[in-house]
Length: 264
Image 1 (cartoon, helix red, strand yellow):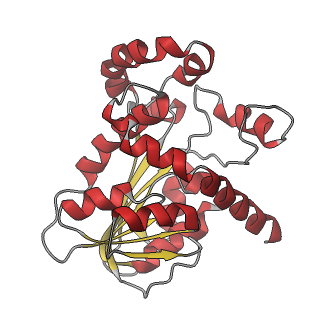
Image 2 (image 1 turned 30 degrees about the vertical axis):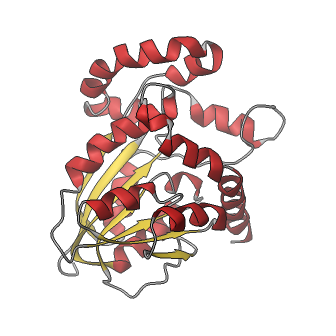
């Protein structure tokens, strides 16, 4: 338990240090979604978010778990949702509050959400599970705050990604290699995600591949080549990333899961 708490605290600190960088990426670099692998990943993810979360009528309540700088909240509020967000980083929340005035934004542990059971119709969580030693605790909390029949849209990091990030992160977490973030991350499989969500009371669970390819290495070794390669790769990526077993080799999962309408 103490180890897990230290891991979460390390993730919060790292993201607090990077709050300005995330804001810059969302406000600036997303205008050119081929400028680097981060913004390309968000472009590919946006396809799935728009597919999973349709434009809402009035009264649809959505919680962003790990809302970061609040840019997804801003977009979703513009689409008609009544939004709330939680994050462990006050630096991230400063940005989120500035661009989402009047929105309910709280500093909280993602494993102990400060809301009553059944408070939301939707839960969104982008790039949070990868920092948790046991993602099932947070998924259970997501299920608790969702109303019966509510939907969770959550990303996770594949264990067998072709970019070899599982191995790279182990090396980086040792703190012995400069240039790599010394923060332990956690990886999973589609099967583990399906079982974890099912155990938390979800049904109709879908696990999809968002984007793939070892292009992160091109960005590190030959950055000027990234933009033309991403342009050329995207049509192929859109066909392969979610194709059967190939999704296990990708760089990001997205889980779309509905909470059961009645206890099993």
